[in-house]
Image 1 (cartoon, rainbow, N blue to C red):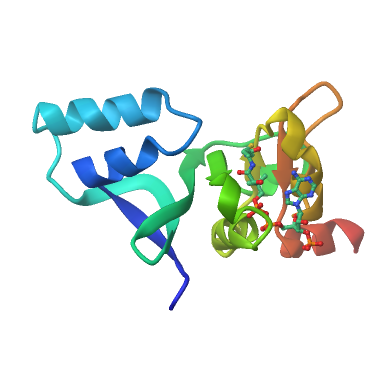
Image 2: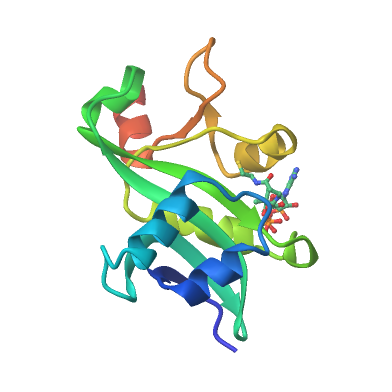
Length: 152
Ligand code: COA
């Protein structure tokens, strides 16, 4: 079985699958609204990416591209990514799916910002994320090219 990260399409099947996940909020509601009012084509690309195990969605994240500078080293970039709602279903945790989703985001080679949930801080540190600033609860990952530039 091939396990890969894929873009989740905007359709009622995806929304049904999302009910298995703990975090349900504005993004999902706006997808529902768009579908109900036919504001979007069925199966259009969504900001969600996920991993299927067989035909079951077992992990997902919401990935946004944001324009504009952030503080510090990230000023070298005029855009960055934001990860929201990274979640792996309980029976599928600690099998590498969380890392696969974060690696997928990293391959765009842009800084990535996230706001970790309370118990996931250590996971993010393992993924190479660090505090954005002393007074921020947000974490950031910066691509290697910039770290190298900073050292030299
Ligand atoms: N605390 C410390 N380390 C953790 C961890 C945690 N909560 N979850 C995973 N890790 C470690 C793993 O042991 C593994 O380490 P290794 O490479 O040394 O073996 C590494 O991080 C990668 O783990 P992985 O199997 O890819 O993690 P996962 O698929 O279980 O996903 C979460 C991690 C946090 C996304 C998942 O547990 C989850 O959905 N938790 C509930 C929701 C949540 O907290 N989401 C965070 C959104 S901000």
